[in-house]
Length: 531
Image (cartoon, rainbow, N blue to C red; front, side, top):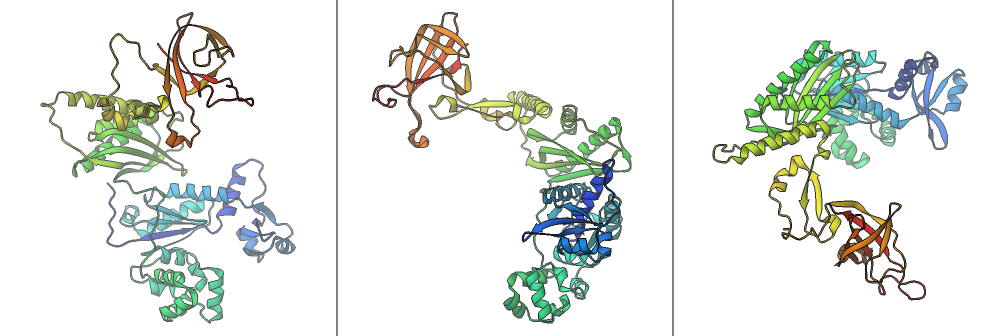
């Protein structure tokens, strides 16, 4: 099981300075017949009604082009410039994909848009041979994928980010932050351009120059936000990180020296991970309520499947069976591609296991079997498709029953109290109630306060031979803003024996009046069908 020591925090800052242009070039390389990628290339965006350079590659930088430069000036310098439009949404999606790929190194990955990531590698760098080796593995892998990378490691995220802006591959020891960032220019802090210009005008060109001044003086001139940013860069405290995903309660994982792709190896690995996960939870008396299995492919694709349980799971064979059920039910089968180099199993939601006396309560075993059956069905078809119905305290027919996931409410459904039915009497409510009442056509000759002689529903005419009612139901006026009409329900039977539950929306002579003040034709609906 992965362990994360919090004694000495270590943050890896990953900067992708040319993310936009690198994304476009990767796309061109994947497409047959794409545009040449060796020409000087820039990405432009509109700023103040003018197109300016948003990102550029090494070839364009070699001509002296820079970010923020007008496109017209850039074309004058480099006539054969290749220009692409900026796509902020696509860049954000690429950054998110890279963050998902970085999950293989640590589960604590935070976005720092538009071009940066933070990885909390506290306590896990030794799994990759140390911080230097981890930084090299990560940087080399992204470079091979076509991304320009700059990375640094420090005890605070701001210090690591500041260092990665100017020096790649630097690892700063704990307590050496101020010494490391002092020679860097103030622009490395990433403050607003106005503050950077103001610092230069004051003769403060490096971070060390600014740190040499009194904090009160810097705060009074440039604001408290900049003072806090400077303190964090010097290692004095740190800004909180917001990981993309919350850290699971328990994590176990299996790394492979060579990628695996066979189903037997994947299945056996999941079984071993399930045993390890259950053993770790058992030490603290916990059981899993939500399980997540993540499969990391060698090409960077990450596939995650999740399984919810109705009761805390404490047996490895149950975990293994639920995961197998979920894998077999996937619409898009788990494609290993060139193989998985990491499989991770986590319990993102756990609960304390309550021991029950099986021999004194014979129903406990039955309840466990029912919960296990619900879990298996939910793993195969989805938890939202396995429902139980609970009664609600309301007289509105369509709100009297609420459908909820069975995994979380089966216990309440077993003890729920439903209205009792009088023996020998027909049911007052239909077995099938429509989600929305469906309109029916009723002749104008219908008696104002009575049921129709016949009606048309779904293009079929039904002659009414038996009728019972009306049952008057008023809407919840305190929730309807005075718009809810009173309903008169009738139980009717047609000549073929079909029984309907129909209602008239509104009262004659009071709620529905035409332009001449006479009762207007009412709206009729069918709300349900009796067996």
